[in-house]
Image (cartoon, rainbow, N blue to C red; front, top):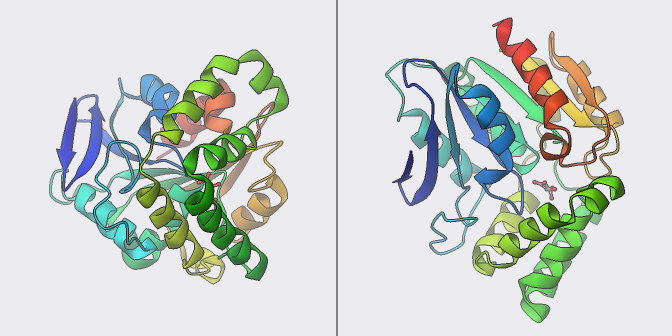
Length: 263
Ligand code: MLT
């Protein structure tokens, strides 16, 4: 079922009596990046995936976003479930930035977290300059060039060769996003807090997953991140780069199911 909540495009799949999972997608994507996970989990879990404000079919508004406003949106989604229900968070990359900040602000609202191809650090000086340059380039050249170049970096060469149409479809979709929303997300990421010192304070069960060839949030960094979270499991996903959940859904889904079965 699709619905709009507070201006956000939301997909709800499964029986609402089951345990809820909220999926948070990455940048510059939309909720459809989770299709393989939702297909695999919606028989047993109540799955919610929404387009982050500014992206996909969600409202852009004034395009002035912060990590805090993204967490406020997530809190609004939690309120959609039965009172006292604590959803599991499954978050990818930028979604992971939102999830970590949400845990710092209100960990008691969630029962477990799955962090896929993400990072706990804030943008350093170099990354801030890069991100600002992306905003400048989107202003000068429009969104298509950025979408094409960035999305291509998210997949392995093998996947791009074998699934040309999937990748091209993803690029085409992203090119049509509202550039104000895309720039708003860049700004929110550029100004986010460093969450690394918070990692040892996480108390809910945590799964950390990373594509073995992820050059954007590399395995070595994600493994170090997992080591700072009490009892966190780390799973390396083979034959995948940044878009591990899309490139190798079988291994990702297996790891997610095994983790969820232990809760
Ligand atoms: C993402 O996949 O969400 C982005 O790579 C995150 C980022 O640009 O930091």
